[in-house]
Amino acid sequence: MRQQSSSPHNAAAMTTYRPGAARPPVLWAAFGAVCVLFQTWVAVRWAAGGNLRTYDFDGPMPGYLRLSTQVLQVMAITVSVLMIVHCVRESRRAGRVTLSAALVAGYFLSFWSDPYSGTLYQTASNNLNGIAYPTWGPYLPGWQGPVPQAQSLLENLGYPWVVIWIWMGLGISRWLRARRPGWSRARTGGLTAALMFPIDIVLEHAYMRFGGYGYSRALPHLTLFEGEWYQLPLYSPAVMTFCAVMPVVLMDLYARPGREVWLLEGSLDLPRRLQPWVRLLAGVGFANVCMLSLQLVVFLGSLVSYPIDLPPWYERPPS
Image (cartoon, rainbow, N blue to C red; front, side):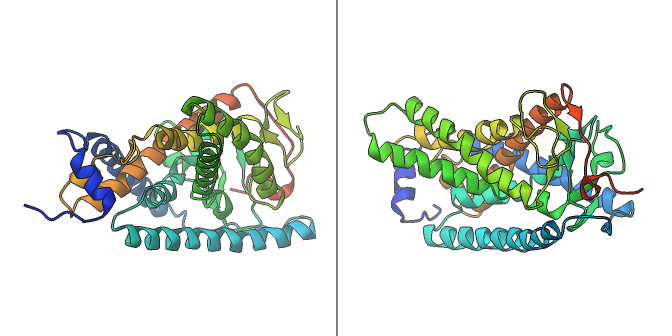
């Protein structure tokens, strides 16, 4: 008989275990493994095609934006490292891979899907003054976007930062439950979504104004600062709220007392050597589904949007 952790959470999992209870995390982990293999295949072909290089931008750009771009890059790297350190320590204390660790791993391994939002048109404008490199879009099946296009460190590191948005959503939801214990879970979730929407607008727009990234197409009548390089189509806060934050918030709201969220429920009853891999890969599978859903919405938005004039640092790089 294999040994089980003596933690209260493991004890709760053992007392409520049912045959097949580990099926959801195992299925999510299987999809996560497929995603890792697929993105490895894309990355190897992209690198072999001579794309391991950066763009050198020397065009006109406001001085404050040159400075803020470099500062933001340092911040993006630092915050990402701190997130990893926090999750490793949290998992060690808990004796298992935590939900936060699984999500951080998942979103670090989900930015490969970014070009799919621009399958036909360029939808993201990446800051060429930062660390920018050729897109791997042409190596993705079905991608037909314009080339050349760039990816950037600032945009790609924005993917693991999604977990910060999720933490905020969980914090709001749990605060509401503590203050209003009589509220239904649906009401709590609805108010959490209503609060996260404007929060995303403020934070995402700040990231953009400091040079994080931009949107090269405007959605008529549904774009803040429409036509400006710092414009924000409203599908962006919508997908961040409903494709990234709320799925985790709802899983947390509807988790049964003493049990984990559905994504990881039952995984602690697997052989101990498999538990961390299944939990991490379940996070990868889940994050990739969320981000592919986000890319789909942005792609559909591109079909009814129009291109704007971009400043030199956001234009497509020379071929």
